[in-house]
Image 1 (cartoon, rainbow, N blue to C red):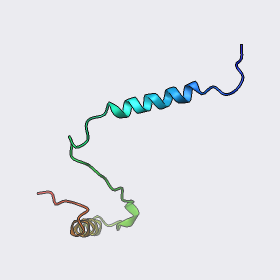
Image 2: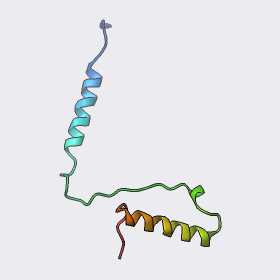
Image 3: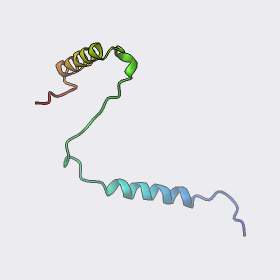
Image 4: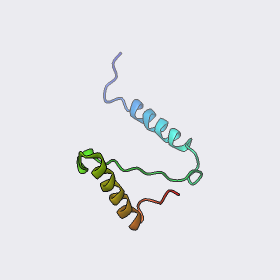
Length: 72
């Protein structure tokens, strides 16, 4: 037998599952925050030696403004 109207059961169930999964995650602040940056290879020279210098220079600029922490 077909029911009239729209079936709202599936979207509600899906929403509840998403809420439950979000709540099951680890407590915030238990792990250090990690962020990444994707850089297109076209930003750098095709010459490896020049590209390494360009990447180093870019990361130095990022460190100066606080985007990248120094790894020591």
